[in-house]
Amino acid sequence: MMIDRRTFSTALLAGAAASLSATRGLAANPKPPMARNVVLVHGLFADGSCWSEVIARLQVAGLNATAVQNPLTTLPEAVASARRVLDRQDGPTVLVGHSFSGMIVTEAGLHPKVSSLVYVAARAPDAGEDYAALAKTFPTPPATAGIVFDGDEGRLSEAAFLRDFAGDLPAAKARVLYAVQEPFNRALLTGKTTQAAWRSKPSFYAVSTEDRTINPDLERFMAKRMGAKTIEVKASHLSLISHPAEIADLILEAAGRQA
Image 1 (cartoon, rainbow, N blue to C red):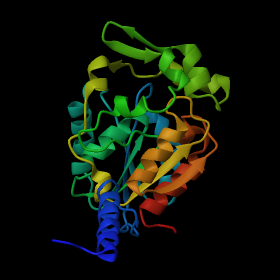
Image 2: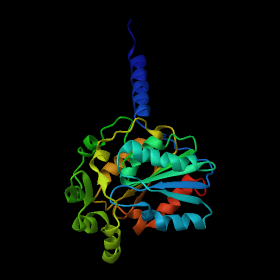
Image 3: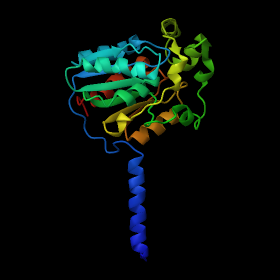
Image 4: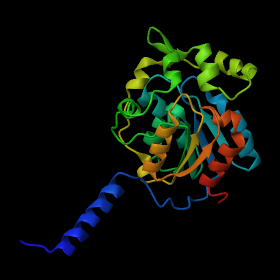
């Protein structure tokens, strides 16, 4: 069957639009429902206390905030730890992840109590995506060279922690955080998400422009692909500690508390 040029052009544009839609999340990010609960998940080289500065601000705003103690063993076990905390919430909940725990937010975010997602300098893979392969399409961040293993237990060296992970924090404070970092199991790095909650939930992303742990351009790519409401913070990877007000404000927006 023959088709004229106008019909062909219309079909081509429709196909391109459908393709773009299929590769992005909620590009027109709707206003999230009002939530009073926030569940926060930490990533590698940290524990739940890294959210303390943000939690204090959320509590002042009247939100119920809970930090998950991520076991850092395998991705399924880490996701299960977040789901247990989500199960205890009494209504709509904002799920927040920093760094590696963006994997957990992406997987656990389909929990029925999760009303919106917040990624803080975090991984944001698609379902089944090889994150390591995606990351290799961008320049390797300096912190990668600072990971050391004792058998299957990994951690960040002190020099890399101070320079590449917590570079905009006072050295004395960064050393305290280094001292309490939770080692991770090598098996954690092999996990892949099986679903991508950002395709169906309102999503928000805080890019750290001075990040030396995840490439900032990779963060921008993932945020754009998600169609997330995005802010940029002039911060190291630890924006949740060096710029807690900006991160708390983004979470409040995700909770439907401010525009």
